[in-house]
Amino acid sequence: MRILLVEDNEMNRDMLSRRLQRRGYEVIIAVDGQQGVGMAKSEAPDLILMDMSLPVIDGWEATRTLKAAPETMHIPVIALTAHAMSTDREKALEAGCDDYDTKPIELSRLLGKMEALLGGNKAQDTGTEEGS
Ligand code: MN
Image (cartoon, rainbow, N blue to C red):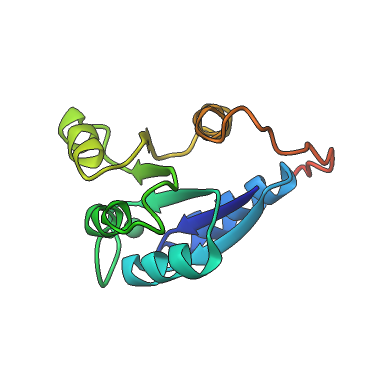
């Protein structure tokens, strides 16, 4: 399974991509909303993890763009935001996000949402989880 992670914060990006890779996912990275839209089109990921607060175009606008384009509208998008406010959840779903999760990321919770959207096709557990 190929996951597109759209996240401008380097520390969040590195940590989450490493943890997902250890669970057997292939992770590709975009650092702003515009690059995220471009990579969704060129790389055809199975699922997108979309930070909402992004430079160039934000996650809401990027998701609206993806959900309006025939070649990307089928790709599930999980919104990630630091704000646990219900208005942000509504805003994310209105923009076309398929699900929503809040930072700090709780990996088991996020994996559950990812697997639900990926149709129950679990990534293979590589069994190489490291302590770091
Ligand atoms: Mn951000």
